[in-house]
Length: 256
Image (cartoon, rainbow, N blue to C red; front, side, top):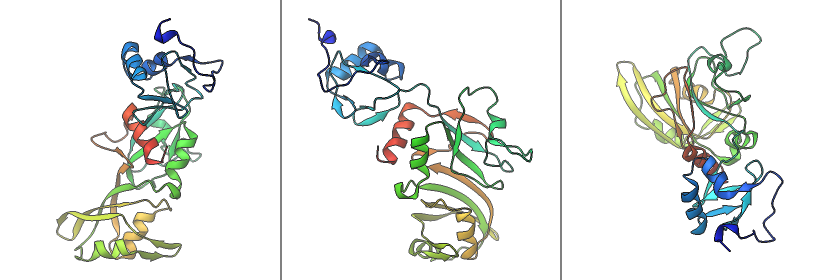
């Protein structure tokens, strides 16, 4: 009997839509079927927490698959996009007032209905994630998962040397205290400065309110990262699909 013809163990449920595991992995872009068979043979693949064997099957719409400990998204119905939201665009897929919204930039390029993860106010710009994976979206937005977000802001200066320590210690706002994970001055020019700060808060207008509270109102705000996903050189108004590695990194960021 060939190794790839062995039946799965009784404790490995096989669903009606299941396919050979190496085929599922190859369809997800892991590599050729031969390369995926080698990964399985070397015990580098788990299905629902169980080390996979050659001959195992998996349902890409139901099973949780990890390769080398990293979650692999194998359900081709799920979409993960990064978008650079331009200034003046509202963070909704469609706007009842007729304002430019996120869906206006997708056109017919995405067949599935996607939703934005978190928000940026109309005057802010930068990275948004769009997906139809409701479970991951919820975890990315929920404060208990502590996913950090980084912002580049143009503010009024000059910036006092102790501002970073003050922000790290916590600043009291009307809806409770807020602290930053990191803060640095990127550049100064006359009476303005560019600062970068990272925090895992998700309250409305939190960055603008925080910096205004310490005397440095924001003139421009760009979100440059959400967890492991970076804006990079993505042009304003453009979207791109996340790579398998980026999706795996998002799952890792929320503890999956």
